[in-house]
Image (cartoon, rainbow, N blue to C red; front, side, top):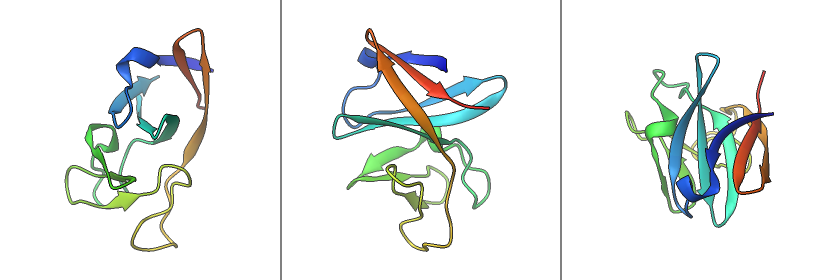
Length: 99
């Protein structure tokens, strides 16, 4: 597990970009639950960690592709999915389990 943020950096509705060993991940707080997802959108590589949560989905800032943070599945096409990673919150710190 790798520390990526403090809980205070991720208030409800926030999205941050976390970089671990040169790879970017999107970390977001949806309704008090923190989720970690692949940081590159499958459309054209848009930075999902620079996106926003809107109506319960993570929205890519480049072309508006949307993903459910709980599953990584596309809002528009169930065949499209981004990777999700385990999250652990301990002592006010957010850790993600990435390769």
